[in-house]
Length: 200
Image (cartoon, rainbow, N blue to C red):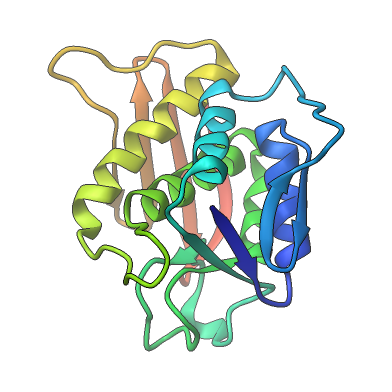
């Protein structure tokens, strides 16, 4: 089950529809499949399957969709898995303005990062009435693997195999995300704000 609330809830669901290929509707804060049943076959199968699994699950994935960060000095944050003192608001906040910023720089990476957020939140989800999980590092590692599969779907390039795994890390002010031999994204930051994306 996917529940989305907040001032940008409908825009978040619209982006999720576009990125996953599903036609989704938001009713009383709950996301469901449209009765039209239309699916865009040219989007990532991995992201499509993930969204489908979430919507059919009895566990609750909660997203609070905000437009921008309450504290502009915080710089770029796609989301806040935990409540963050620099970002007043609940855990599970996703910042639609940051999604749109990534989309303008790299539509592929926007879909990849949407998958990252959904995988983390889904792994943390529990049945209604139970608090979400807090094993962030484990969830994050799995989410990086999901990123790689989504990028591979969209770009038709292989992911790392064997002892090499998808990874991400900071090199100075550059965030590097490596998914395969020919799939590497670099996110360039200035004063904490995302300024450019260099992809394969």
